Image (cartoon, rainbow, N blue to C red):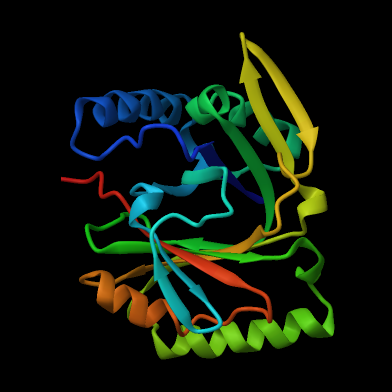
Length: 233
């Protein structure tokens, strides 16, 4: 089974910009983690700071960090494990578990091509917790049909994506003073929770936004568009 680990940090913390010594030091920490985790890692990405985000709600596009957020996603890792306990054991080793916290979400669907590129973007889909529908329901199947139509329309750009299960299935992982703290559900009582994401390629923010506004959202849904940090050569 696949599990998405969303990596959270404080919005009021100083952002670590790609290309700086601080970013390189953080990258080294994650490289050491990935070397230890090995084949259990199925995908993931680091994201540019939330100050660069684009938000889409009801077809309206706005820039910058979202005002309701106290914590922001700095990236994600996807694990492939047979058992949740094994996944949580790995999540304890993520640097974000010490610096902020990690939400581990069981996934209903997952795909990602092997190598990221310099033109990748991530659209994180968010919904009010009560609006997230369960797999196998008529509402889920109707949503799948809408997403399949979108995927067919922009197939050349899509690089991956996934659908998440309900917030009730989430485990939040924090590590403080060497002790792991596990709690059920998202860390905070947020007005919105993640319910899926897309990875796609676009040459610039304008082109990425043009794709993002076509992504199906629920009646009260929102998406956050962020550029993916390219870590390749």
